[in-house]
Image (cartoon, rainbow, N blue to C red; front, side, top):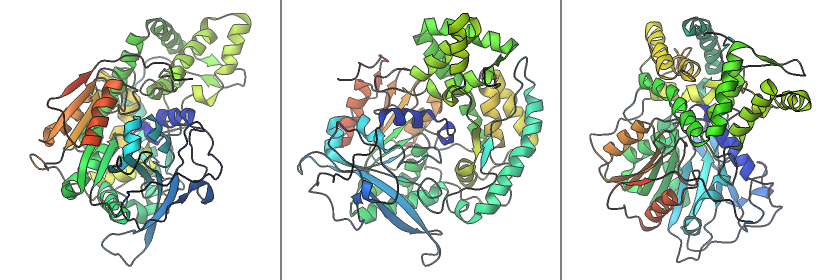
Length: 516
């Protein structure tokens, strides 16, 4: 999906990409790539645009290009109000004979900026970068696409949770529901025009417009998380326009709003894998949580540090490698620092307490609900949860996800509170099978965002598909997991357009250190 924490300022994927990227490289022009289709898009060197400085690796002699594409706000009114999409491209680095076309990528959310995270392209296998123009964009309503959804009510804070002791989640929900309802309603009132035209259907038609503007007969598509639901929707609408699709860490294409709560317990599984893989860190973790359950920490600046700071940071950081070497540096840091602050002595303890003042080691200010997340989800799904259903689903999430089920379950069940006036435009449900497009479905067994079963359900829909399964708790497998097994399978598929004979499975192994 998803969906969820990819929307927040504390997004681990955003952190990972920020750590992987470096300042933009001056105004050096990209190497020209011949053999491309005739495009009506006016690509320019990004450093010369009014957008931002795009992240590139100084050691890689490739540079991004940027462009915009104007689209109708309402596709049924082509002469009416417009939206402007921001696009970014890393041209194929190979020879004209090596070029296979374009690879369009959506990083999920809904609400994640493709432009901001475009440096993920450098994690792909070299052969893929040689073969494809890598293109991504900021979907309508977010990032540097205009207009963007913003204003009072759009960024909803985390729920207020008791710092210590047993949590009465039904009481927290009772206090949370009117807050979400009020803020969602304010955000919708301010942004109604873009919100009612920013659902997955609208974004799928934007993909088709991008394809046409690129002059490509077919595209190759890679969707991550929510990007798989967007990709599946595009496949339903324009199957003949897709040469090959990689759907990575999937949403269930048959799901409804009620099913969202299943993702609330997924982080418990990815956290479990992280602790299994790091037993020494696990011992510290359980000691830290047990202590913070009883008593919070007072930091030197007067802030109170609670169990939720540790859990919220881990929520993102165990699902993504946060360093090019493929480690869980942020997850390990928050646990070891909290452990030293609680159980250390003297200068070491005071230093750890001071270190916990860093925003990177504290709970992010905003949660999942609100902004484009609620806007898209409440467009895509017409069903709504009654208060009784909200309480019942939250209780299920708490039982099945003792660490995260309460906090995230609350976000899931209240997502559409306040969106009573919005008119849904539900995504088309796939037919029993098909369409008959070559699809590789990739997933981790203990994905902390989108449950593995959702990917199985995606694979069932596409009869001309194969699965590649990575043992582990990571969200995002292609490139992001730094698994040679996964990268080879998906890279070979994209380049050849041919599916493997059978489904594949890949073991988890710690990635090799980065080259010097």
